[in-house]
Image (cartoon, rainbow, N blue to C red; front, top):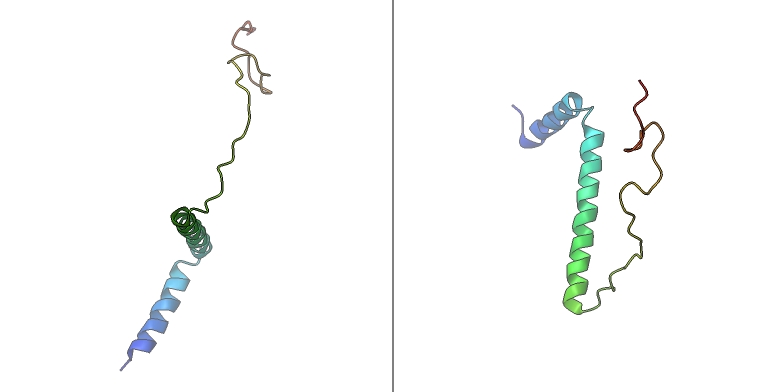
Length: 83
């Protein structure tokens, strides 16, 4: 009958035919997962060696609510209702 390699090839072909729409999404997800895993492993290795880069600090400013520009199409909170 069929050997193990023939069954594996048939299984791969069936999966490819049935899941053709999802394969690009699955490959993209696997790639992202691999990059995250690699970055985490590198960070852990750097942390153990004591060569971790200093964290980046971004300077910003605090803006109180309502003092910024109103996005297009939105109504300001204190604007009268003209209906």
